[in-house]
Amino acid sequence: MVRIVWEFIARADRVQEFEHYYANSGPWAALFRKNAGYHGTLLLRDAETPRRYLTIDRWESVASHRDMRKRYAKEWEELDRAGEAFTESERHSGIFEET
Image (tube, rainbow, N blue to C red; front, side, top):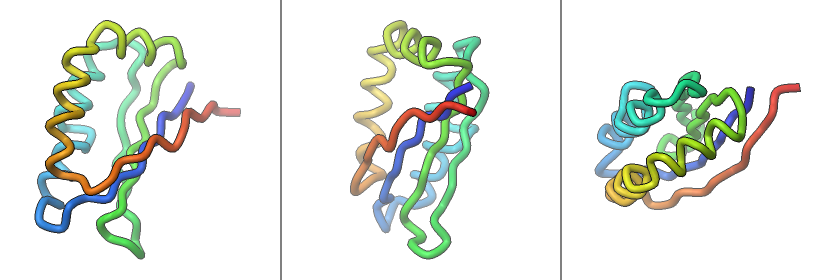
């Protein structure tokens, strides 16, 4: 099992929309659910910096995530572009394996 972690700063005037967009019930997770290797998304808000968030996407393997990105490259790009309206910054923090 791997975790794919992203860090975001939400726009002050778009926090609720950001939370909906990146939550386990949002459009990113809907795309991911089309793939058997996906096991859910966690959206975490920083308790000290309230517009700072982490998303943690759980995948069976790096290969299952890579296959999804190839298969749904167009949809990925569309979601990524649309999500820019809700964020000031976005940073891929890494892919982490369970030990």
